[in-house]
Image (cartoon, rainbow, N blue to C red; front, side):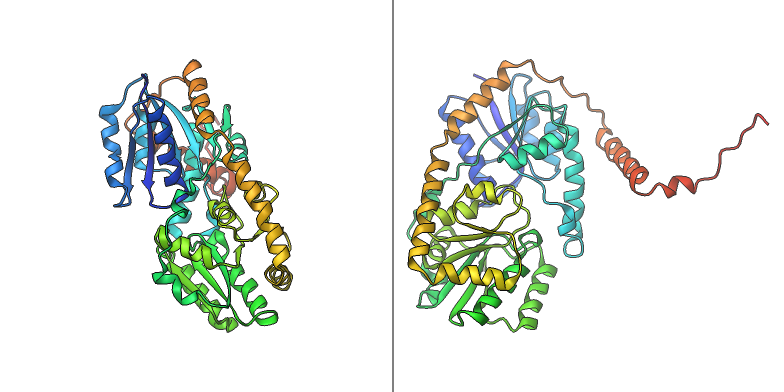
Length: 400
């Protein structure tokens, strides 16, 4: 039986990619494939489930298939690229780097280089899969000749646990709780969330609060700007909760009256369908993959004027009939999502890959990536700073 391993930079606890990676492994092992997860780093709670990416060199075989989860360029990515194994790419999208300029230059550089590096895999992969149609189209635009969609089918089992009220109990009262779940990162447009909530809190409902649940580390400059915005607006009752356990997350969903999302860039956005599952009405900005993820359910908005959004918030929160209608549509969307045959789709795509003539084995010299980076740097200079070349001394014609 062919060995089908997964390789990625980091396996995180409780995030969408982590759930998908573990779900893929379960499907592959149930189908009889030998399947390991090779990573650079992993959350300590998941480390026993992984192997170091350097072990992949010994596990490599030309008849094996690597499922490479690409989000940013990494040592694990470049190691996998050079091995003789077949490769299929699973693309989780790369946030445009301009969101991080001025708040996290390191990540801005990583996103820029990651998107640039992604193009090198177009000829390396037997198939490139996006976890949404939005991501598949992105792969196609980047020049990948063979693309498909491996749908995200969230595993909601982590939301079926008993709630841990240790953190959330202070908010379990008769106030209106507006919830957002996601990392506090610039593309999520947390500043707009705060402005929308402040308008709602001021105009419609002073007995309301905004709860922002998600990791705060890594973007301290951005977080500081958000705190400054709260002070400038005089926006009371904005709570940055931080990272929580699954049990605490369940508690926050259970006390939420509305899930509000202002994100401008999403490859899928799993918290939207988590809120669907937990029967929390969702109001979200219609950008990138968000409309397709919501699949006709919830409420979308395009006008980012805070008063407009606050009016929509009030229309939902103040009417039980409206809430019930929204929740009913959301649960129907969850049923459609869960009815997708994730295991069958995955195994069908594996059969397609293994049944095709494989892409040529890579020929990677010791300085391949250095030369790749240099070539890309020169091409970017040619495109975006042509004056550099014009400033070079004119070539002398020795024939005169």
